[in-house]
Image (tube, rainbow, N blue to C red; front, side, top):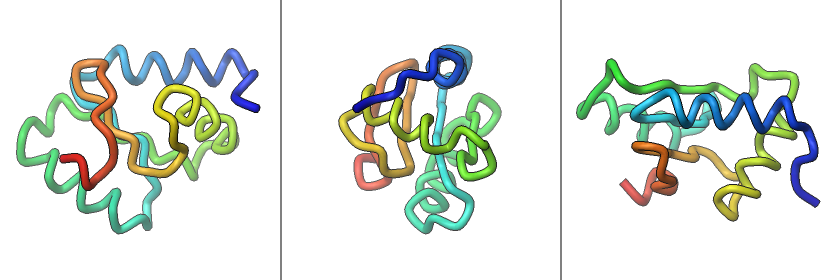
Length: 90
């Protein structure tokens, strides 16, 4: 299936490319909250957290993250443009 929305692909890729730490998250997700707390201890000024449930293209964002990482669950964490995993992978 995958994501066919080129604007969403560019949006997601720009977040990954422009930030040392990029986290795709949902506000109320306990694993997201835990991951963000852990990552803030390393370099909070270089971290971007994208709360995807606030984006009208959330389904396409999750589809593209699945294309990139094999999973659509959150958090999806990238460090130095490399996919790290989710909360349990930190």
